[in-house]
Amino acid sequence: MNATETDLTALSWCLGEIRESLSRAEACLEQQLQAEDDDVSQLKAARVHLHQAHGALQVVDMPGVAVVTQEAEGILDRVDRGELSLNGDVVSRLAKAFGAIVEYLESVAAGAPDRPVLLFPQYRALLEARSAERIEPADLYFPDLTIRPARLASAEPLDAPGPRLVQPGRSHAGRPDGAEGGGPADRDDLRVRSERGEAVTVHRAQHHPEVGEEPAGPS
Image (cartoon, rainbow, N blue to C red; front, side, top):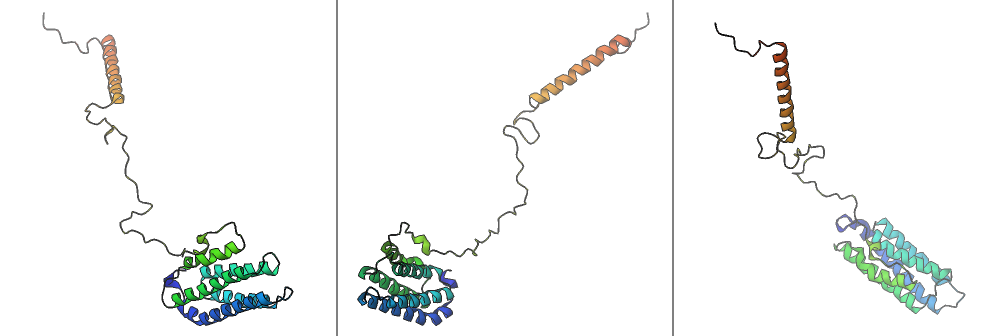
């Protein structure tokens, strides 16, 4: 969705909830750093608050921003499964992403263009936290595929007949350019006709001698 199609009304309704949910998620993560190793209650609470913010972003239909919160959820899931350690660096990366998301949403609500690729630095930091192999800003790009380019007024219809092709070196009459007597095929045709005419004349002379002879004068 581009900036002109962002539902600013829905965003204004959900912005407060998103801001509050991300703030609570950050606070829970900070508390989790101080908790005992076997106490993951604050981690689970942070996941709940983050999931609420992610759901609100889906309601306002901002998929580019939701990619960042989805990645943040993935990191907390890895921590919960023991695949990733929750340390100060990871919490700092998450907190910076949360702050950037809120700041970005506030700017869009104020009329700025919806360009989620601006969140790529924070998104990249989250991917690097889990040593992702693929890091691409294109993940945050969601073009509006319903927009089609305007059709040119002077464009010809697709079913319009194309131009008549003329073989190079020949005119529209089928003769070589600049020639009056035609090409080799025309000359061959004239030669055949001439030979046929001579054959007919010889045949008439043999069977009808009187044909073609001048009448004899009086003796």
